[in-house]
Length: 439
Image (cartoon, rainbow, N blue to C red; front, side, top):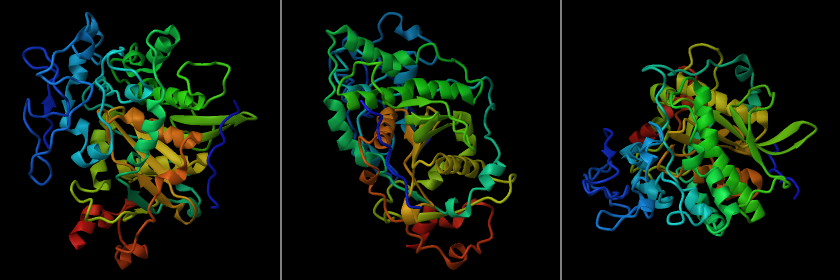
């Protein structure tokens, strides 16, 4: 099979935990909040409960394969125990509006014939939590902006950021159709070997139990997030889950020696030792994300979907100095520069606990960055990564994203003419909360 042809570029609430079981040892439905307490939505009403398809309700009989730990599973490690990873925080499940457009997750349990019969089900697996850093307060910062980033050509500098709630979910039906057709035959050793080689429950073993540096997050995300998605891409391309070493297929690797080096890259092909990069990957520690990022300011406020038109853009001022830049803006500059230097349109930033997806606009919108909602570990992030890799590999098309035209018409004159006196980065006057104040 020949290497895939890459898509062409351009012409130019307080946290609340849900326990994994009730007093009888039966598993609770992670999407059915009634056994503990209902969670109120943004407007104060109670969210409808959504039923997780793969976990039984408290009234149903359970079997060891449906959720109760098998002997020894509880003691896998502090970060792999079933109790630790079946406990899901409110933020881990995502908003009600997003869940309605996306997928029901699978529990983080050993893959068995009773819970996994297709690649579709395998990719829905909840991710394990990232381990804690080696000490409290460690690993909370990210690198300063570099001279290379400052020197990005003016024509390639980021100017607009557009939040798109459906950036990934718009691919759901296409992805489900592809992945549901890839069946796992548990009577065949090769199928068993294949599914256990990419299922997060098995790939998470032997990974660091403590985060000593960002490199450990890289090890975790590659093992349980990116490589399972790569396996699914390969399976779709070959229409078979069995691995064939003689076939050419995309892969995830460390970065080549380009001006700005991402933590990883999804490589489509290579020629004369030069890779064709389909997606750039950046990792951050959960500590850095929690301390330095305020990503919710870049998302639409919950419940505002009908009030903010698609394409409504925020203004981004490209930095002019190495120092004095906010953490979040430094991350955005880093990710954007990677897209520019790698000459690709798609990017991913992940802490394991949180993953976001990036798309660079094309043509007249080449200075626009489209961003997704933050995918927490119970929001099927592996499935979302598969969608992103599938675009790069040509299974889906970039055009399938149907990206909205960025709309800056609501900016005031000082912002539009770059007279707004503010530090570089996202212009606070163009946050979506400010848009809602004007309507």
